[in-house]
Amino acid sequence: MPLRETDRRMRLRRTGIIPADARVRHYDELDEETQVTVRELAGRPRTAPEVNDLDDGDVVKFTDYYEVRAR
Image (cartoon, rainbow, N blue to C red; front, side, top):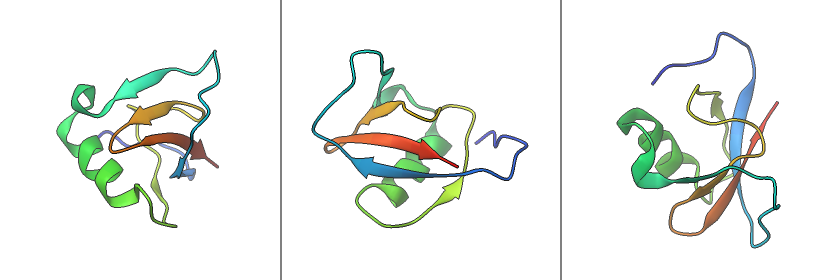
């Protein structure tokens, strides 16, 4: 998984509202290592190093819709 060269970390937050300007990424479109990160973060209060595949504000369709938050 290509990590960004920043100290930022990301988390996934379940969401029922998808902003009109959000980029929606489907789980099966992500590279394998990013899929592992999504599985680990979905529904858990954890963070992981930010990956190149996902940006702050993106929405990932996995078992539910999850908004990516990076800080």
